[in-house]
View 1 (cartoon, rainbow, N blue to C red):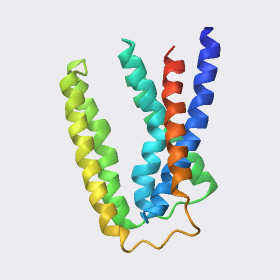
View 2: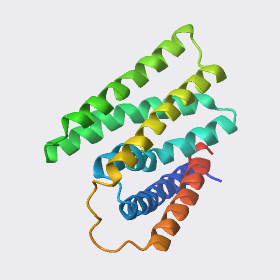
View 3: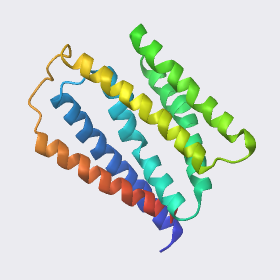
View 4: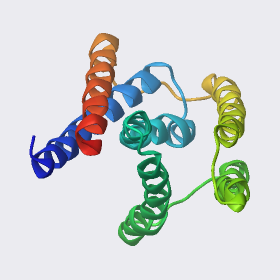
Amino acid sequence: MNPYLSLLIGVVCAGVGGDLFVRGLIGIARWARISAAIIGTTIAAFATSSPELSVAIGAASSGRPEISLGDALGSNVVNVSLILAIALCISAIQSARSSVKRDFPVALSVPIIIGALGFDGSLSRLDGGILLVFFFGWLAFMIRQARQERSTAPAAGGEVRVGLVAAQSVAGMIFLIGSGYFIVH
């Protein structure tokens, strides 16, 4: 297949898949009465990062892990300097002080940890394991936060059709997996 066509198909699959995945997961979160702050820092973050995950897995599986590193680092720069900047230019963001205290240190520590792990000139499987331990620790903390906030979260407006949002999530993930394959190809 022509590499430019493959890249185009991958980008389209990422867009469609990301949209479906975000809609599905946010619908499930609304159904489960999870607060908007938790949705933003976990579910929406997972959904919008899933194209990068798909590309990273595809690149590493194809013997091109440097694509994974470039994708991860590049998406962080784009997320902070482009996406957040554009959102702030459109509308200021009000955030609870507790949310900033909870999320800001973690967001700052991840690049520092990656820099420290890569200080020897390589990132190894052990380094990947360390990052996964850090990630799953953060995830466990966020799940605990979601459970604590669930009872105080207001009921979601409108009825959520669980089957539809679950199907959107699955379809989105299929597109995202396909996007990773086509982009790496």
